[in-house]
Length: 374
Ligand SMILES: [Zn+2]
Ligand SMILES: [Zn+2]
Image 1: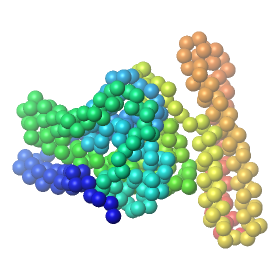
Image 2: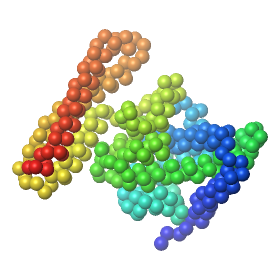
Image 3: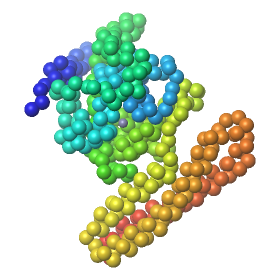
């Protein structure tokens, strides 16, 4: 039976109760003031992306590089979320990726939704050895944040909103909204990535792990809800890989890249992403017709294999064209590229989309008719 970590457990229980009681009394006395909500929204957004873009995609996965001052903002505002130092957070998270769905995964979803959400934090952990974060502990700023984490967390989480409130002439309202309520909401939004993102949604890229893709989780977590993709391609700076998927963290990183604050944004090669998708859909389809005759299964496999091969070939060509464009994005190289590169990219895109349409249509047909009636 694991021993309770009293301090963390009390903090995680008392902060929501405090937010509800104090928040309820405050709102019933003065109502909801726009300035207080604004303080909440601004500070919530800054601290939340310090976890998603900072702790997670930058520090844990090295999905991009950025200017030093951006890292400093992540270290300061990440501390404001009371989710431990970068070293502790990343060490746990790397164990989660490496040992997903096993006892060595600190927030193993197989131990239940509430364990993954909050329970694992309430019990004593094995002392961390930090052997899986040596790349980060070489950075003096990260070591400094780790060493002074607790005073920094208290100052950033409660001192800053209180200070802003003093300037605005409303210290208690700002402390409540920008400090207490924000901390509680931020906690549970992050915790959802360990619980809901391993429970709700689909598995388009890897059927071997519990992680799932869901727009609901993505909306609640600044884009971290495309978690199946993330577990398959953890070093990609995007979690929502498609253009229309809700991933504000991806847009923020791209925005920083456009003004020179971030660079080396890693994208998994398109052909690997498409191959993962094809593999998953094929397996799902074959599972669906497991009870059919060998003849039906062989026919379905053959029909899907033909369109899948065509899709993967066009994805490979498009991936190469996209990498060529990225290599020739600047200066003279860009002018050289403009002569032939764009037409190749357009053609590759057109062929890929046509192959994808054909693949989807074949999948639909197989799902809707052949497997039912054969
Ligand atoms: Zn996960
Ligand atoms: Zn991750």
